[in-house]
Image (cartoon, rainbow, N blue to C red; front, side):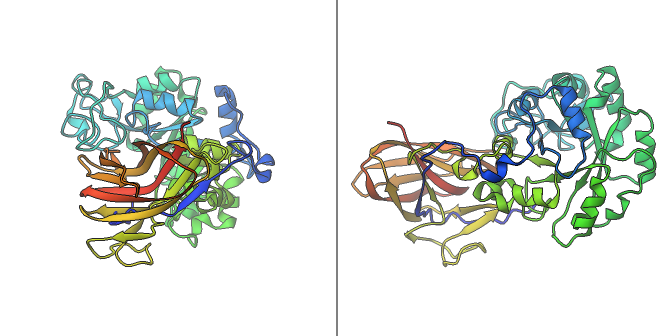
Length: 464
């Protein structure tokens, strides 16, 4: 994955008032003509939908490692929440324990996501069940949770009757996974995937007509499309980092659509060019809409709720805001003036000294040093008490503190930046409340303790 860091040297923003005087989630005219996935579909409907490979087939959502924003990645709770949030497909990662039991774990070690150390393959099932999962995407400083490492059997039973399960990391243990699916009567729920040679994949599909297989293609394997004898893959996972890559050319995509769905990833840069979840939150034409126009009918995402909202016709301008001039967003890069301690280390800023970076589509200010500050203008349309929040990411703890000064002698001082478990795991953090009269206000964001967090924007929500 490519992370182009932004130094949070100056926390500056020019206020953009988000107003939606009509409905809080307006539907665009274009969206009204889209085919939509029905809410609360039965599993039979989801399965039938997966087999629909028409170019205008309703978009299906795959939740990457489940809903890790609320629960530990690859946990049963994350699987269940992803389904509740609108995903028809849940992606999990599967590895074998020392005694040959398939369990859910992305890495080949347990270090990042649990309180243990060492390779998954060195733990017996009994031993790995003693470990506790860390919150969200884990990491050295992530808090421990009550959740345990699930077996594939437990995961399939949780998803049974509710969702397709995208089986990642497991092509080399496909027979062991298949045995679990047979045992749980979920062969038609499992989506096997890999990039083996065509003969190997075709042989596996021939073992059982209920097996669902997705073939991964990149620059070097685009010519495998239509090379399968007999049964075709239910989908092709198309990975590309340039729009000139052969596997994403219109003719190749049309070739895929003759027999299969087109699956694309939007979690970070380089999976589908620069079309990402974070870019989509800024403008859908920079992400999801662009990927859809390329022919994707399945998207794998790290932001299930937002993608589901957009898929059902929501305008991203109104995502996560209140209607009626009750929410104000101030982008971190839209500063009025600043004081910075080092030179600009990012490519996104046109102004020296301000480290404005692009982290997989999120335009942020990073690398905050103690003593740096930035001032912003905030245009308040309605007087009242506002909740103040910062949308940011931080891959560790502690990650520094900031203070907010309002220009009238009032302040909120030494706000702790909380660990979000990954640089790409942006979240809203509560920074307190204060009363604003209608009019233009100046806010100074002062870095009172250095940190490696990434600030996207400051948001003001009218409480009363």
